[in-house]
Image (cartoon, rainbow, N blue to C red):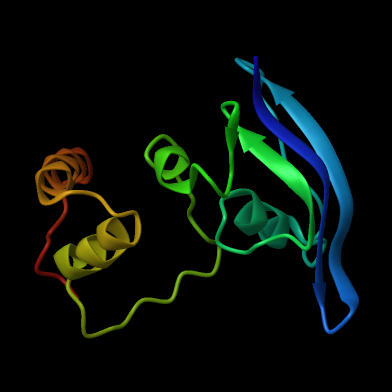
Length: 129
């Protein structure tokens, strides 16, 4: 089974291509590096794959699930960390975690489980701003 199947995705802004006809496949168990110079549209491609941005054409499947129809399920087994993270400086670490968890539509029980795991793993001070 393919872990990722991207076929001819394109995204246009004011009729100018941000990405155009991007296609690639990653087999299950395969290590795949998505490497190119700054400004090559890696982030746009990844955001499109994870349904943060809708492509104007093409299809994306992750773990054999349509990236749009099964976005919630895909987000439960994937992660995305932007290289350009800008959170509000007045929020604590715990408040930021809640914002992110809510965007993934995690239940309160799942949130608490995940928070406890990451707080312990990274020895987080959840009161720090």
